[in-house]
Image (tube, rainbow, N blue to C red; front, side):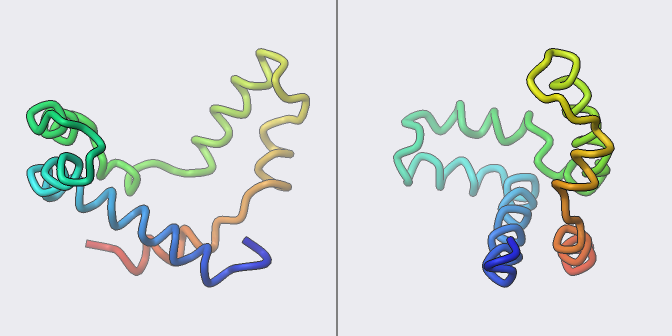
Length: 105
C-alpha cells in the first residue's frame, strides 16, 4: 500500500464496485461466472448471488471487524498482539474512507 498507493486504491475500488454489482445485478453476475468458467451451473451461481449480502460492506465498520477477528485469533493463540495494537499498527483506513465517499449511492 505504501509503495503503490494509486494501485491500492484502484484495486480496492474495483473490489467494492464488483460487490455492488453482484448485489444490484445478480443475474448478470451469475451469467459472468458461468461464461468465465468459474462454475458450470447458472442456477447455483444465481442462488449464491441472491443469498449472499454483497452490499453489506457499506453497513459494517471495518475497525470493528478487525477487532472482532483479532480477538478471536488472540483467544486461540494464533496471534499474541492485542486487537488495539493490531489496528494501530496494521491498518490504514483512509483509502476505504475515500472510496466509501466516492461510491455513496
